[in-house]
Image 1 (spheres, rainbow, N blue to C red):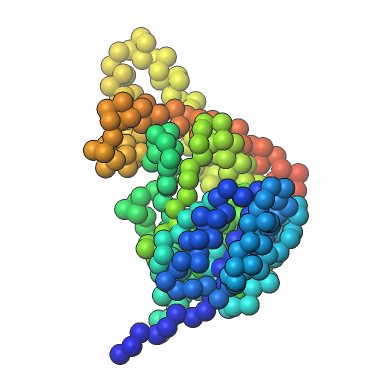
Image 2 (cartoon, rainbow, N blue to C red):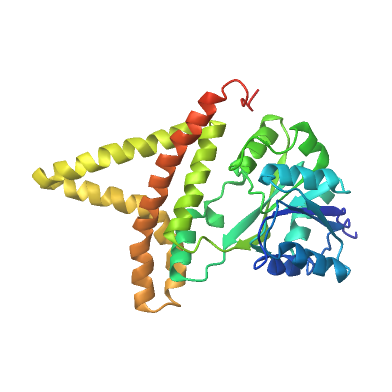
Length: 329
């Protein structure tokens, strides 16, 4: 029997000052094995050549709609793009991403089954351009083997959902500037909507290029966690670890037998990044391998410090706006 053809889908993207990365995304979008019915791009007020890039692609005849929403955050941009989209199926991705040619077809495949889901989670991988970026990707991003599909919360750089699902949860939370896709996912699950996992719907994106930009990224993520009241236990464990760890280190100066458990604890904390790095070592020079190994603990430390600073900032914001931002109700 012939397979059911994929249902038409609108792809939505939010951008701001993405002149350099945008052509790679658009080229990968318009090279899909299943063409999007349209691509709706919400621009948050670009001041570089982003709009010129978009207009150039429109002039080439690509099905591209550009919305100007200056000052909009990511949630507001996504909601505006979805509201303007024509199709019932919405696929979302981000600027700075390059998509596999079968990305859209893999996302849409589950919607053509006899019992289709409401949401299909794609996956994402790092596309590093330096030793630092490779170590950062290994430290912060899961491998496919790390994923438990039943509980996986998709990133909005690779996800598809029905318009009715978006409507049920009143769209992306426009009061939240970071971690908005986590809250969106949790609201979808809270509403009882059904998820499927499409591991071959791959989006590749470049990690942050240096520690400063990585620190800023993770500070904002943690601030978003605090604003939304997310992952309190996880953050509490981090504070406890960084309270007990230095005390245990000082105790180890007098009680040498503590050094072995401390070393094992440190190795366990970095084991997952090192496991992800191992496959790439056979193609690298010894100096690059040593640099990657040395960078992992530094990246862990910087990321944890950024989170420990950002989370209470978000909590303070949440306390000031208490009663107005309880998304779980």
